[in-house]
Length: 335
View (cartoon, rainbow, N blue to C red):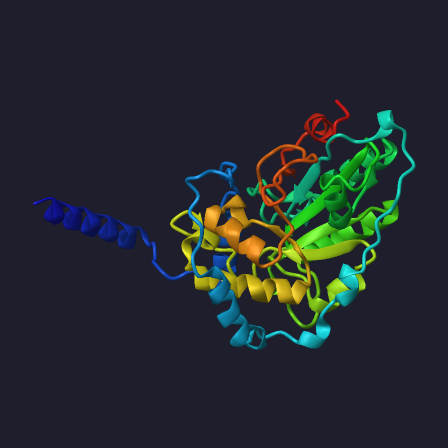
């Protein structure tokens, strides 16, 4: 009976839509990309990796070994000669600081896409920060005497091996949008700032393309090589930045699929740092990342980071379209 009622209701809705002129069709590629981009970012709870309830993954080492033997990187469709080895040649700066001048905690900022205020595309997406606001935020950092650091330097601080000034911040961008090169790069370079881009390597093209503010575009390998004076490029999965029933692929796909994807991602970036797509991860994810040599991983949970934090569950402050100047200053510790 219930099934019959449901069928009748569905038929009525379909008939009404057709009468009003609505046409059902699959999403175009652009619409699909935009739909994926417009989904919300939401993180999970911090996992106690020392909990006796955490189940140790069995056979993980064997899965990794078998994946290496299959040489999956050759099937990734990228030109391996474009590896940006220079990206990993990083020096740690030394700061001569008195005890009262040393940072106890560091804010890590998370950005995504940037567009000028005048552009109409993605107006309803809160993760898209206006270029005008981004420039104002960087000006605040500069005028307030802030230092920006690389993730390599942040790792040194969190490991207790590096002292940093109180006014220190790390800047990150998720996904690898071309707008980061078009708009953020010149602003950051003007102030002598450093930043990291967590790239979805499946989206990276061999050649750069002309920037178009009306669509979502991703960086190219040549963009990466040409911007190493400002950006480092890190991991955001190869092709698992997708949702399945409101859960990220990183937690819904099999162990074998996740291992293969992350091995490709890491091989292409040559990085040991990672950001969780949508902030989704579980205890299996943590074990896989650790086994693959990831040394720091970032969530979307709000807060600063400090020595003693779990390096695979690090906080970040999300900066959004509606982030006020007051809120931004609170994030970085000015107020």
